[in-house]
Length: 208
Image (tube, rainbow, N blue to C red; front, side):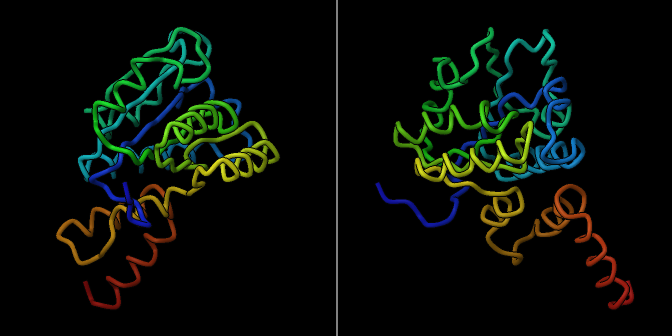
C-alpha cells in the first residue's frame, strides 16, 4: 500500500499517551507550559480534522496522576484506554484494537516520557507496519540527552521524529481554506506565540 509523502488527515490517528499531571514534574528538556500547549494544539487540530484520538494513562489514580485537562477540553471525543501499570501501551490489546478499528495506518504519537512512553509503542507500531510520526515536543523527557538518544533510536527504526508545528502544517496543507484562521489561532495561542505578533502587525498594516 502506497502513502503520500506528507501526513494525510484521512489516514491519521492521534495517539496521546501518558500526558499525566504527575509525570510532567519529571520533564526537564522543555518547560511544562510549552509541553501542555503543544499537546493542546494536537488535540485541537485532531478535533478540527475529525481525526480519531486515542489516549491512555498508566494508573491515573496513582502518583502519575490523571491526564492533563486540555486533552478532554479540546478532544472530548477521545477514546480512553486505562492501563494497570503496564509501561508499554502497545502491550494492551484494547489499545491496539482501538487503533485497528479506525482502519487507518498513519499514527501521530506523543507520550510522556519520550524515551519510554513514546518510544516503546512507536517502535512496536512501526514493526507492525504502521507509519509512525513521533511528536517529540509534545512528549517531554527527563533530560535532553535522553531525548537525543531516543530520536536517534526511533529514526534508525524507521519512525519519523517530528514537531508539533510540522504536524499541524502537514494536516492543514493550505491557507486557502475557510477555517484558515482557526489554524492561525492554534499557532499563535499554543505553538508559536510570536506568530500572534505577526498577525497583529498584519492587521495593523491593513488598518483593521
